[in-house]
Length: 115
Length: 114
Image (cartoon, rainbow over all chains, first blue to last red; front, side, top):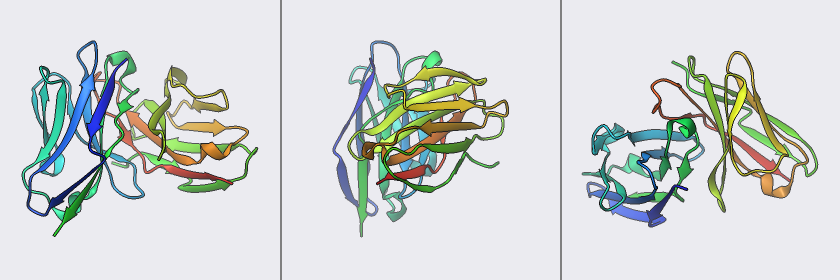
């Protein structure tokens, strides 16, 4: 079975600093990987997705993630944090077209952005 | 284009009652999935419907059920509510082509069981 591990349940950065949210996956077959963001009292919004087309994936709001098979990682980065980036971020994985709706989510990382 | 719409946003029920939650997918999306989000268990997959048929199912008891209508709208039902069913229930829809289309989530229904 596939799984993802998000290191760090809380991450705090200063406004303007680099954002790095870690995600490692476990899968016996090539995975499809996603990052979602959740703002308070809202659902999940897709930030970006990896579907084997390119290892460096650019998403919305200046976020990007790099798929590294050798490290089984899919870390999310943003060069310069903004106050509006404060939210909870979820990494998710699925493994096949037949179960493309059945995502396995990580436990989430809450990002705090300080002045 | 309208997003995924879930109704109601908030619901309070008592133990033993049943509840029905509704979801309207994005126009043109034929696959609808349901997830439960709790502080303790995180985000967990409940089930997926496509063409009015359940295609995938998570590890939840039979008290949790769903259905999909011919217009792709979906409902989920929880019978004999327990305190532990208190959660945010998220509906998501996706295109079925291309095969790697991502899920688009609604804002959820927050269910409180007292």
